[in-house]
Figure 1: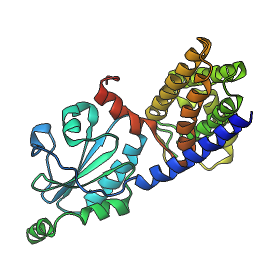
Figure 2: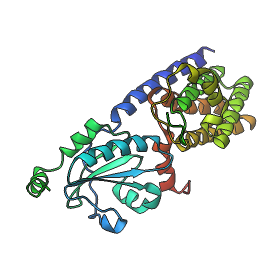
Figure 3: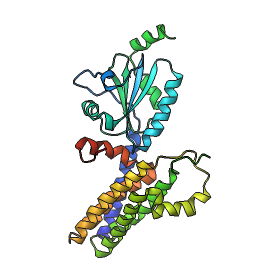
Figure 4: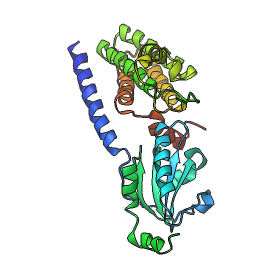
Length: 149
Length: 146
C-alpha cells in the first residue's frame, strides 16, 4: 500500500508541475519559426491585411479557439490595417505541416509582406495580442501610419 | 441568459474533478482486481460521455442536479464538441488499461489510470482542453480523420 501512496503523491506533484508549466505557456508571444519557403497565403485562401494579420489555426473540438477568436476579433475591429483570419486545420493540413503547427489555437502574426513576425499558441489574452502587435517591425507600422485611412 | 446551443463550461470541469478523484483511487488500489473493476466503471462512464456528450454523463447530470442550482447562471456557453472529444480520449486511455487488465496485465490498470488522471485533473484545475492539444497531432499523424 505504501508504494501506491508514494505513486499517487508523485503523480499529484508531477501533475501540479505540469499544470503550472502549461498555464504559463498559454498565449505567450514567441519568436517566429524559421520556415523554409515563403508562404503563399493567398493561394491558401488567406487574404492578408495591409499591416498585420493574425492567422489563427483552429479546430472544432478546440474550446480555447473560441475565446481566442473573440479576443482577436475585438482587437482587429478597433485597429485599422490589422486583420484576423481564422482557418480550420482540417482544411489546411499541408500549411499546418509546413508551418510546424502542433496545437490549436496557434496564432501566427504575419506582416503585410507575408512574413511571420511572432506566434502564440493556446488561449490568447487581449494583453498578449497587443504585445504581439508591438513585435511588428517599426518600418511596417510607419508605412501603414502614413497611409492610414 | 441565452439558452442557445451549447453547455455550461463549468459542468465538464466539475465532472472532470469527480473523475480525477476516482482515477486517483484506482492508482491507490494499484495492480489489483478491485482497481480493475473501478477502472472498468470509469471507462463505462467515459463511454456514456462519448455517446451522449459530457453533459449527458452521470457526472454531468450530478452537476446539473446538485451544483448548478447553487451557482449563478453561466456568463457564456461552450460548444459541446470539445468536452465530448475529451471524453473519447478518456475512453481510449482507460479502455487500453481495462483490456490489458482483463488479459492479465494488471500493472496496466494503475498506469492507464495515472495517465487519465493527469488529463482529468488538469482539465478540472487549469482548464486543459484535450481537443486543443491532441486533435491536430492526431490529424497530422493520420490517426484521426475529419
